Structures are given as C-alpha cells and as structure tokens.
Length: 267
Image (cartoon, rainbow, N blue to C red; front, side, top):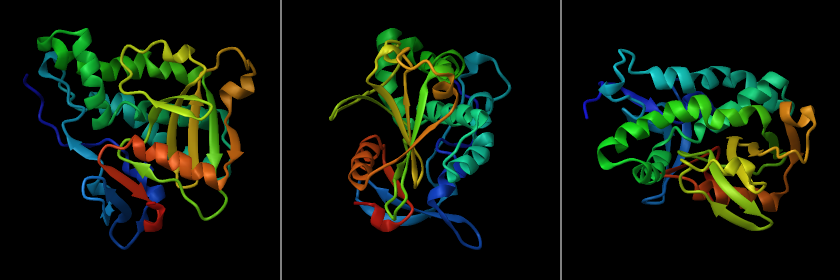
C-alpha cells in the first residue's frame, strides 16, 4: 500500500515529557530505561518516543496533508497542555483545564506503537487481510472524532498527587486501559470494538501526567450525577504503598522504554 512520505512522529509529546526532564544549555534530558537490556541512560526528549510514518495515512485517503491525523486529532491537546500543567501544579483544574486533561489522556491512549500492535489483531478480526491496514488507519479518525473522545464529556476524572520525594514513572505508552475490581487488575489488550467498556463500572484509564500526578478516568454511570464531578477534577493525595502499585501498572503498560525524573525512581 503506497504511503505519503513523512518525517518521524513523536507519539509521546516532547512538551509532556519535559515534566520528567532536566534542562541543560542545549536540550531537555530525561532518564530512560530500556526494557530489553534493562540499561538506564540519559537521552534528550527529542530523541525518544518517536516513529517514522506512525500517523501517515495511506494514499487511498486522497489527501495532500500527510499530517492531518497528527494535527487535527492530537496536536490540539498538546497545544493546551501548558495550561493543564499550570493547574496540576496548583492541584486545581478549571472546567476547561479538566476537559483538556481528559482529552489528552484519552487520545494519548491510542496514538502509540504499542496500541498499534495490540489493536491490529483486533482489526484483522473485523476486516479481511487486504483491508486490514486501511481499516487500522481509519481507527485514528474514528476514535479521535466519535469514539473515545465521546467519553471526555461525561467521565469522572480523579487526579492522585504525591507530596513527598517519591515519583511516578512514565513510559512510551503512558495511557493504559484496565478493569479494576478491589485488588484485581486486568490489563485490556486492544480496545477496538470494546464499546461495552464505557458501561463497565470497573473500567479505568490510567495515565501518569507529571512525576507527582496520575490521572484515573472512570465511567459516569449515573451513580454520581453531579455536574461538578463531570466537569472538574477530584484531587486525592496518594500513600507511598500505592505509588509503588501504580508504578507497577505503569511499567506493565510500557512498550520498550520507561522514563523517570530521577534514576532511583526505576525500582
């Protein structure tokens, strides 16, 4: 299938990763841990979490704009991220900041190579071999316009925050989907066709958003109908033992790399 030539796509935005980075005279440097060789190193945010032609549409879309997906679905949330970050630093989000935080976490959950690999198997079950790749490319527009982003308006947004020296880690696939019942955690491998998730009270989308903040999105099933819960974040302090638990979940959702503010955060 012919594709439009395109440069590499940063599937975890550099502006997002800066929260885990330190700045020198020339670049933002972040600690990375390669899960293949378990080797930690420092890299620039410009050189991690990128892949050539990840969002490039097949020529069948008849578009002269090869960056249409990246610009129209993902970039809008990246541009709003600095405002969201300001709210997180104060542990308080406005209505607009809450909407943009939800939007970032939700779209981040389907823009990475790991999502691509996990979801392709599901796509092939829904389409024959010849149309599988085209069907997969359609998923960006489908999820970005009428799928997961429908969830932004009504889902409940909880932000867990850390007040001591512990930190949340991050990964090259930071936003992951889970079914959580008491202490039972089930990772959801691929979300295409899983329209039942939004009606499941145990469904959670989990994403670290700074070294001190982690977002949990949950369906609003009418149990709580308060507009405040739908339009604003709930901030809760997290205990040390739970930080370790969530870092294990974050690591489980990774593809190839972990990111950290400090090298001792890799435990």
